[in-house]
Length: 145
View 1: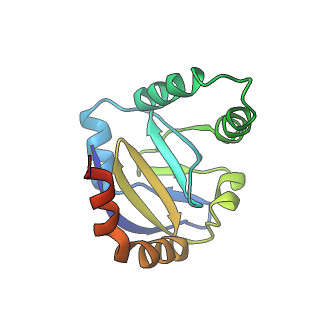
View 2: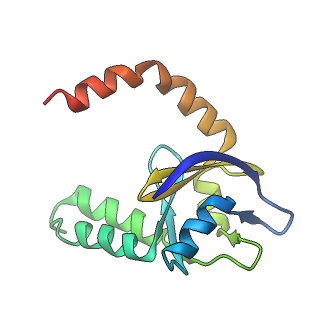
View 3: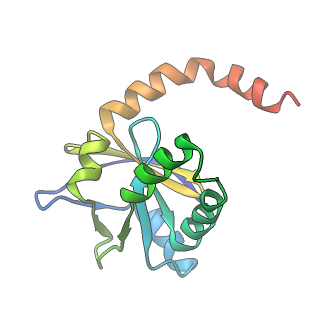
């Protein structure tokens, strides 16, 4: 549903504008709110409310008796915040999420099918630079079934 890579900036009031393409998708799918939380690889994950519920249900079945499950769930869900965009398509991310993702001013917003990832621009560039060479190797391993 969400695809592409977009460079944006945090404004002086700490707001981030969602790409117009993502706002169009949200409107056409009647998505009024998202949930943002700590993601992996120093980025933020943002899900539509429906997809958030799907993800939440997956994590509910992991036994809380397992220490790693408890740690992951605490960090993942304690960081979660409901996000809505204003009439200009801007969202306000809490400072603790921006700190986690090392977001200062420039960000890269990436569509990854069922979620949106929000990266500090320098972290995205580092990730991309380190990962693009292994893209084909990873593809082979993932589809070598």
